[in-house]
Length: 520
Image (tube, rainbow, N blue to C red; front, top):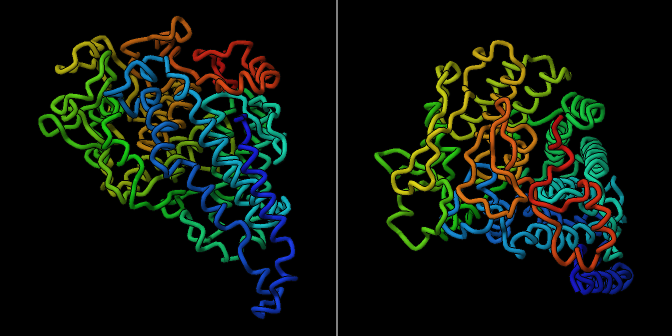
C-alpha cells in the first residue's frame, strides 16, 4: 500500500535497525578499545545526507528524466521527439504525472531524511540534521512547484496519511527551516569537517551550505513576492545581508562521471528545445556553442515538439541539437548568475539587495553565466537590441509558428525605464542561465511572470483544461500550469487531498495556476 509517505516496511526496517544498535557502545566498547569521544566523532547521517543531496536535482537518470527532462517542453528547454502525446500535448499518462511525487518525494526524500532525523533526535543544532533540513526544503520546493500543496509540516515519521500544507503555509515553513539551518551552519556547528567524505557539493565546507540555503531563501522570496510581499521582502533582505552565492566558486553543483542529462539525451526521448535556441541565436549569444551541438549549416537548431513521433528516424533526430555536455559535465543546482538576477529583480521591487542597481546586477548575472560556461565575455552583447521572430522548421513544417515575435532584447537601456520591460529582460537572461538542468525553476518563473515568450504547443490534448499560450500585454498566459495530484493519493488519502484541492480553488486541473503564479 503506497501513500504519500514512504512504505511501511521502510519505516519498520529503520526502526528495527535503531533498536538493534541502541546499545552499541555498551556491547562493543571494550572489544575494540573505542572511546566515547571516538564514537562521538562518527558522522551521524553522513551516508543519508549524501544520498539526499543527490535528489535535489536527481543524479539517477530515470529520476532526472521523469522529474526534469520530460517537463522540458514547459520551460522551452527541451523538445520531445518521442512520447509527443504526453507532456508536450498537456496530457501526461497517469504514471508519468505521478512520478515526481512518488519517486523523488516519497521513495527517496523521506526514507533518508527520517533516518537522519532519528539519528540526530531532530536536533537542528546537529550539522547532519541542519543539512538534511536544507536538502528537504530544496527537494520539496521543486516538487511543490510541480504540483502545488504537498505534505510537509505534519510529516513526523510515523503517519502514512498526512494533511497537505497549502503553498502559503509551505513556503512560510520552508523559509523558516532554511533560515534556522543556515544560522546553525554559520555558527560553531559549521566548523566541523567530519562530513567531507559525504559531501559532493562543497567538499565538507558547511559554511558554503549555509550560503546555499540563504540563496535558496532568496529564490523562494522572489517566487512569492507578488502574493506574500512582506514575508518575501524581509526574507530576501535577510538572505542578502547574511551572504548569498556571489561567485562561481560558490555554485551549488555536483560532479559526475555519468551525467544524467547526457545519458537521457542519448535515449532519444528529448532534444534541445526550439525556444532556447531561437532566443540565443537572435541575440547572437556567444554562449550558443557552449550550450548546443551544431546540426544544420554549422548552427544549432531546436525542436518544437511535433504532432507525431520522430524517434524512429535517425536522420530526422540528427537535425536537432543536443545539450553540449559530456558524461563528466557537472550538474548545476543554483548558481551565482541566478542569484545576481534574483537580486536585480529584488531591486526593482524596492528591496535592499546590497546597494547595486538593477542594471548592474543584471549585467553581472550575464557576466557570471559566461564565466560559468568558460565563454569569454563580450561587452558588445550587453548592447544587443535584436528581437526574436518567426519559427520555421523546414523538416517539420507542422511545428512552424510564422507569426511569432517577442519584444524582449538584451540591452537594458532600451527599456527606457519601463520596470515591466526591465523585469522581462531579467527573467529572460536568468532563464538562459538556468539552462540546461533547472527545468522546473525555469518553468516556474515563466508561470509566475509570463517571461520569456514561448511557442504555443503544436497539439493541445487537454480537453479544455489547459488554454493555449497567448500574449497579453507582452506576457504569456495559458499553457501547462501544474501536474495533478497523484492517483493513489486521490483514493488512499482522499480527505487530505480534497482539502488541498480547495487551496487550488477547487479544481485539480493542469490549467490551474499555483498560489504564487496568480496574477492581478
